[in-house]
Length: 105
Image (tube, rainbow, N blue to C red; front, top):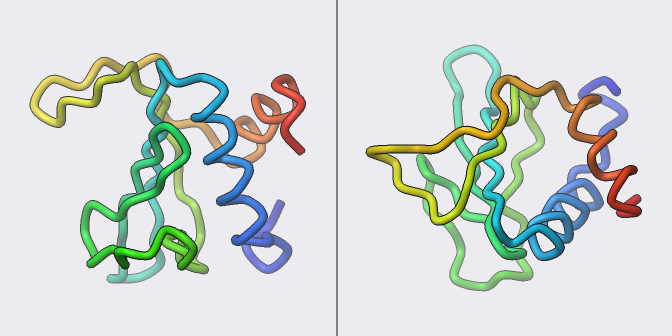
C-alpha cells in the first residue's frame, strides 16, 4: 500500500483495535519524510506521539499523514530504556497481515 492510498484514520483505528485485542503488545510506528519525523506508540487502544504534542482528546488523530517507514512490535509494558522487541522493522504490508490474521480489517 502506498502513502497516497493509505486511509490514516481507518489504519489508526485498526492498529488501536489490534493493541486492545493483544494487550501484551505495544506498537511503535516510525514515520517520516525528509526532515520531518515522528514516532507513534500504540498501547491498549490509545495512540501517543513520542516526538510531537499529543492532543488530550483521544478522538483527534495522532497518526500523521506521512509515510510509515517501519513498525516495531514490543512486549508491554513498554520501557524505553529496555525495550523488549517481539519483531522489528515490519513494513505496513506485513503489519496489515497481522491485522488480517486477527480479523481486524
